[in-house]
Image (cartoon, rainbow, N blue to C red; front, side):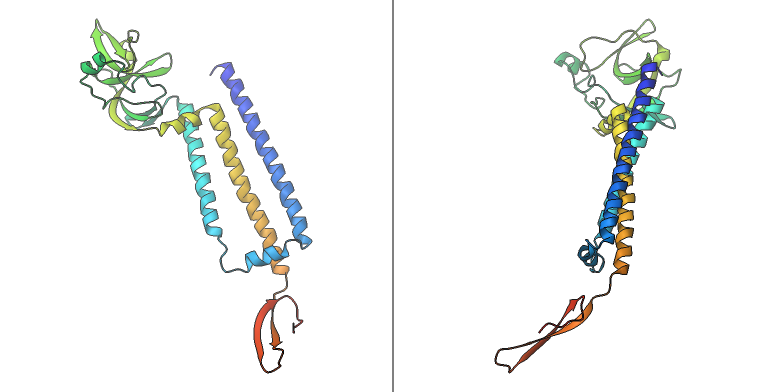
Length: 275
């Protein structure tokens, strides 16, 4: 890792810690202020209505919160794994590559299209996640197939155009010019034709320093929100337990002629009867 990458990672880590700290202080101050208001009885009516109603509606909120947390955490971990391992994610003898360029997204002219019979089954675009098999050291390479070769630490996924004097010439379907000569030991992957379109866009975002930082912040804010919500709920439950239970009050109404009385019940927090 070069010095610029190290400095960038340190800056991102410091920014993340700063955001977490500021968010936590803001949450704590809000909870403390709300707790003082609750202790003064300024939210008794709302608390009584919320905790003594039959339908609370807490489950959908809890499910949504945890689903968001799982999704953000999964994307964050995926980005960290891809960044730590480089450009690929290995599964036994197969790797998943996230495509970063559009050099294989289409044929650049009719001549190249006719050369490969207008076959688009081996093409892919930016953000696609493509499955590649590992190429054995003594495996045969076929012209027209798509391979991945490593050059200066970067994997290039292009179609094999020709072989001459032990050197391999690759070219992207959307490129007019050929790549530089490639030796056999540089070719490491063979495209299987299986891909997941566009999903890799999120992985590319998560791989970037800004993506990792923003995802870490969103995960932290989600967790902090859930923790604060539980603290607020605990305060409200404690206050609700200290509030007196409403009593049933019988209210009697008489018509003006005094011949008929209508009696019904209503819930009040007082023992006085209305007349």
